[in-house]
View 1 (spheres, protein in one colour):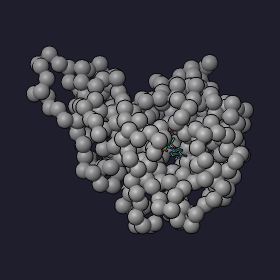
View 2 (cartoon, helix red, strand yellow):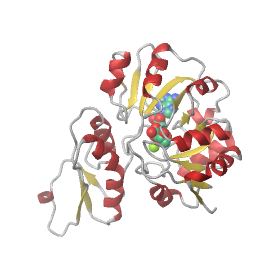
View 3 (cartoon, protein in one colour):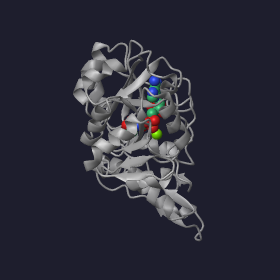
View 4 (cartoon, helix red, strand yellow):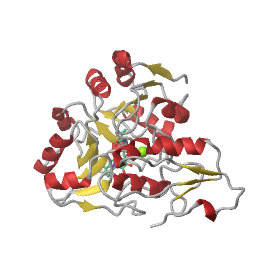
Length: 305
Ligand code: TXA
Ligand code: MG
């Protein structure tokens, strides 16, 4: 299949792709997503096929405006509404009991669904014009580093998807923070673009899900994820390798927001240089640094927890 490249001025055409059950890569403030009509199970199946994603890994449903949440979620508890209204449009996904009409494929058979409003005017307009919420995982091959620009999407998915709309570089650079409101106490399933400290200042104490290994507790969160082909080490230095070893490094200069924004591009670029190893380091474990460290650990060859 030929992948069509659309410009931000071509929102109507982009919405047609969604309405016609096709796959469209979309910009968001976190990473690019691979979108399809969330209510069309055949279109959603194509997402799993294009990404080679296992069907036990549920997708996030993206909506354009808060009112649209009731087409996707059965119940919106007050704490969820309060947090969503503070953080949306933005890098927060909330997990709520799902409406029956959401296909099982979207939620991997779970009775809950992940929902967010992305902070991209282009993508919200596409959702409005296509008149349906869109299911969209990150637009990379399964297990691979998430894409933060259109070129990186095409590197992974060219020929596998119908179209991509180029919205430039993603401003946040790591995925959304995921908070579940399915049980009494909110649970964080993934550190991401919204700081946990901020979330707790709005809704109080949040439990942290078992992040590593416990697939039943945190579906789709396998330890080896975001991984480059070149082994990436967090606990080694150049002198640990023989002089012949071709060593790649990633630039981790600047504040935590800058590091987050550049993280996936740095990993992808280092990977493209055909080095023998890539060296990186963990950052201060606070705020968006918690998301950076989580992704680095999942990308690393020398991290087991
Ligand atoms: O920033 C983001 O969230 C990006 C952009 C495109 O919006 N999307 C994204 O999607 O990161 P994806 O598919 O790469 O990650 C979705 C993850 C799943 O792997 C799973 O861990 C969690 O969201 N998830 C989705 N629905 C869930 C549910 N009902 N219960 C628990 N976890 C869920
Ligand atoms: Mg992903």
